[in-house]
Amino acid sequence: MTDTAFVIERTFAAPRALVWRTFTDKDLLSRWYGPGVETVIHELDIRPGGVWRTEMRFGENAMFERMDYTEVTPEARLVWEHFTTDADWEAIQNPRMPGWPKALLAEVDFADDGDGTSVRLTWTPHDASAEEIAVFQGAMDGFGRGWGSGFDVIEEILAELQG
Image (cartoon, rainbow, N blue to C red; front, side, top):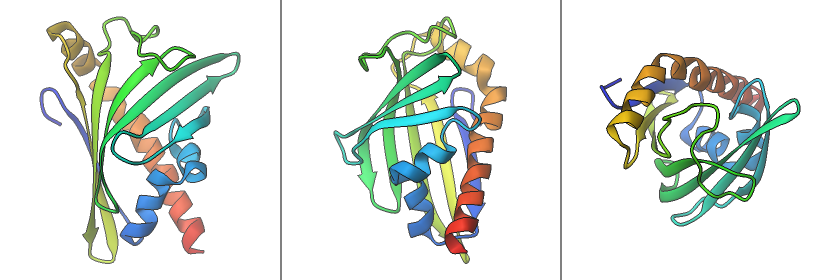
């Protein structure tokens, strides 16, 4: 972790193509993204200029997110701009976190690591004000639990897929 970036790294005991699939297959992605809530992926178009639209349901409530892909290198790298949105997929301020950055940049790198695959996810405020960066920094300690729980589910998925 740097002052303005959250970084999580994990090595998975699976080939890179299979780990990549957990980030690019709609059914697998919906299982691990947003662990503990119902995740509905409304659109997943993985290419530069493509979009990923997700709804996370918490009982009667929902939160919408749009990820706009800016870079896709198969089995090596995914980069997207990450937005909280309204139900029409328009970027909005996060209603649950005043001062939260309107946009985040996510970079995910995949690399061979012995018999497994290492994944490095970097999440940073994008075009953010000093206040938004401060709010992001203040919340960083909790990011490992969310992303880490998702990565734990990826490990379970990979174990199932490798049978």
